[in-house]
Structure formats: structure tokens, C-alpha cells
Image 1 (cartoon, helix red, strand yellow):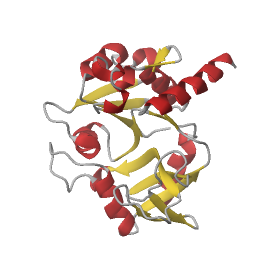
Image 2 (cartoon, rainbow, N blue to C red):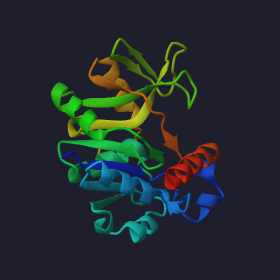
Image 3 (cartoon, rainbow, N blue to C red):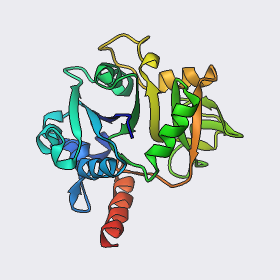
Image 4 (cartoon, one colour):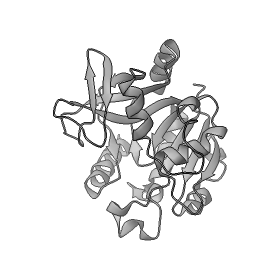
Length: 235
């Protein structure tokens, strides 16, 4: 594994209040451990070595727990939103200088039981501007937002998904710095914008995965994640 990982962990986590009124979502306890600890342990097992945490709301608390990442066997750097929340795209645009020409993007509330090395190998073979993992969903885990047919990603649309969208953005993408450089630095935007643009240009590649994801962005998701990790820890 050679690509670094950007973790987007700067949101306000309003759906988890009151839990997140005093701590960031990344530090929410999941079966006895802060969620970020579970993410970083998992990334180490995936042979990831470099992580950039994109933080905003209460980000100093995350840094106090994670530090430089050495106790996880990782090198961790930080990119701060500053006074204005930058959104997923703006935060990644700010952090891109720490990440190199291509890197994984992972959301700070997601745990994805997939093999990162296989996805990276696919990316290197295709050399696209961006590669998105997709899961057959039919609105089961969340609203489907991807049209994926015969191995091709035809459209990504988070804002106005169509009824024939049966797949969902799984939450792990490999992006190249070039797709962010057309956006002004230090201005907020959502990653959905460049993703949709690339998809309509035929330049957003899809890679289908088959294991469900776990997330702590909602009370229901948090309960499912806690149950999952409780069982994992007992085996």
C-alpha cells in the first residue's frame, strides 16, 4: 500500500446531538473505543502508512487523542478548516498539498470492510481522475445515488438521484489532486460537485464492492456499528 488516506472528520454531527455537543463525532465511543481509534487500527492492518485528518469542529480534541499517529503505527498529519467550515470538498482541497498526486478519501464516520490494496491496484491499472467504490443498495442503507450499469459508472448524483439509481457511493474513493485544483482554495464546496461533473464526463470510474458499510452518522447507524464491533471483539 502506497497511497495516503485523507479522513474527512470536520463535520458538526448534528444528527448525533446531544452526544456530539461536547466531543467530535470521531471520538464517539463505539464498543469501548473512540471511533477514530477503530478507523486507524483498521488502516494500519490495510498497510496504510500515511493519514491526513481533515478536521474542523472540536478538531483539537481529535489531535489530542491521535497525536502524530505513532502509537497506531501510522504517520498522521492534520489539516484544519479554520474559522469557516469548508465542506467535504473545500477541506480536501486545503489538505491536498499534504497528500500527493493521488490518495484515498474516507469519511470520518465510516467503517468499510474492503481490501484497500485491490482497489488501489484497479486505480493504478485504469489511471482515472477518480475511482469510486459502489455498493448495490436499492435505498437499503441510504438513498441510492449512483447509476452503475455493466461495470460502468454512468452518473453520480447526490442531490437529485433518479429512480433507476440502484447503487450507492460506498464511502471510499481514490482521487487525484487535479480534480480539486479548479476550485478556489479556502472556499467551501461539497465533493458531490466534482464527482457529479466527472461522472457526466465519463471520467468517474466505479468499482463494485459487496460488503455492507457501517457508519456512525446517525443514531441508528451508531447502534448497528456498536453491535458489529461488539461481535468482532468477541471473536
